[in-house]
Length: 251
Image (cartoon, rainbow, N blue to C red):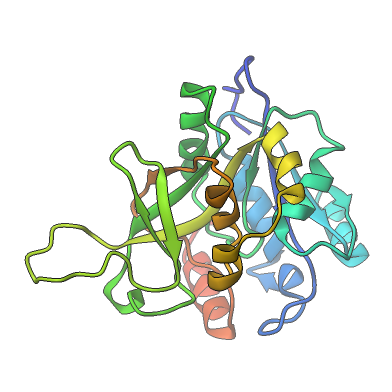
């Protein structure tokens, strides 16, 4: 891990992971060029500067055993959580942290720099509770409801997230670029602990997007633009592509 951990805020990464998956069962334990997927994500997160600790939050003993095998820290959490954010909130109660970065457990190619960039606004603005990432949306993903879009204000604060294409282009000359949301979040500890107690909201339930709950309750989410979205492993085809990419590297 990098040596630039701020004395003002202790930042940690928590990776939520569970075995239950509809499209790719036992996903965190799948082998990717000699390492489990969860170890690949852990390896990448540990390379980010400014991170004091990386832990995996999981309800599954099999994942905990794997994490301990490669020398990581596993925090066992309840099976009853509705979301990864709820799982993080339970896990952070067992950690010394001022800021928590939520890194998805199915992104073995996550760039360490993206973690660092998500932390920067929190260091610069003490009133900010939460950040996330966005990038220009690829043309072939514009109308894919699984690819979430976001529109942001001039200062970078999110205005809305949707599974639909936003903004709607009325003319071919429209200047706004459709931005894809990347599901990496950074939170201040106190907000992460508060979030599960916030009442679920109508827009959140309509779009099935948990981050809308924060906006509807009046919290700001500062969006940081990055170059592109990391490849998430949701299907066998995604797994094949990641294996091909990593097999071409020095492992």
